[in-house]
Length: 88
Image 1 (cartoon, rainbow, N blue to C red):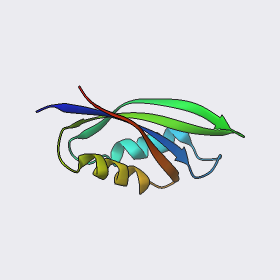
Image 2: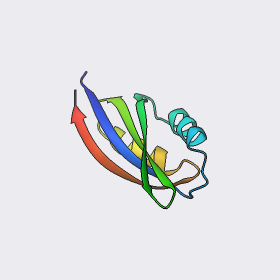
Image 3: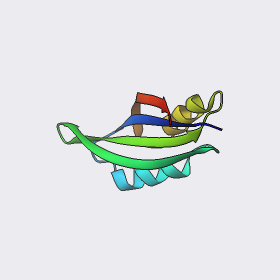
Image 4: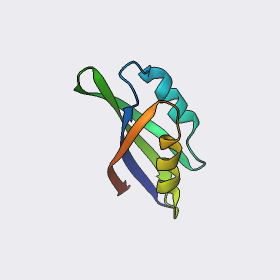
């Protein structure tokens, strides 16, 4: 079965959010068949830092939506933006 790489930019709800804790919560909340493989921090403005999360998952209908929903429902996530999705 093919794999898909998905890159999502995650904006915390506040500047004061602990990004290390947020990363851990996102990793734990991944649906079956998806896993976080890389996390980068990207400074935005006024002290706000976004997380750029790369996720590897099996190619399955609806899994990208499940991943987006799982991240959105994580505490202290303000907004997400899907940057890229590609087969590997």
